[in-house]
Length: 436
Image (cartoon, rainbow, N blue to C red):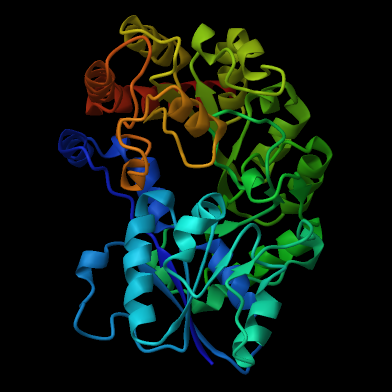
């Protein structure tokens, strides 16, 4: 069979004013642009599970409007497997419908499909609910026998020790500034707003160290000096695995980025190992440095108990030469218009190297979405194209939706100004040099 793996890779802010700011202040949407430029590791992994007698290819569609609706789009295939962010899922459905109308078998999967399976099923011959790796070999067999079932769902979590080598060789190196490797899956925290991979399969797991190093070696066969993003929800949640991973990566001569929680700051031995292993930056969800974080972590309010240490923890991490990308969420229930100034003051005091400002976003299937739906606070239910982390989709409690929107704009203009960005860069460089 001729099989195409297709990733809907674009992220577009819907609000025209926010889009304008993004054009003038690149830092405002910098993280989204990076995410959009990453290849789909999930699809490359499925490609690695596909037997050699099938002809496979990998494609990305950043904007469906750029495709030719009267031609073959990306080409003629027997099967297309499509994955998408929630914000691009309607484009994915449009592409799926186009291929279905021409007799191509369409398979949809990913986080959004898992959270909205009935919606997705209307646009595909088959959908995958949950992790796709356990299902893919059976899907291929069923396709060969023309017995494709409408829905596939694994009975148990995928064993990461059985992870195949992703087909990095299908990529065009010049298109990417970083590549992804997954070292773990899931996160032990249960934040109300989070649509992380834990919702695909509710169990935190780590990948064996030797398989991770083998993937890095495979990448370097094409990219001699790659920049790596560890595609994890919380890389160092399992501290023992984190130490072992850093020990193994120390001699790899790589630069890399990942996401984790603030507790990593309290393990000085791990921080030193991370720096020695080439860690350039970690993204940490700070959400709000004050009381507004209360209640976000649904298993014991862990995050709210950390806020009094944020400044100390950020400095401790950055003093190891590892920059922190602090992620803030605007529009939390306990926030008011005064919160914007309070967060701005904290950002200035923290000397964070990078800042990611986002708006609280009710992704489908999350506890947040269900709560806002029950409270009749969703402004446009199922407007998935607005799940960009910047567009306002609901009615806040402590302010109007327009006040939230304007507060985001005003704060972004200060945070991402050239003057403040240069100031943060200089402060980090001077402090890091002084500590060496």
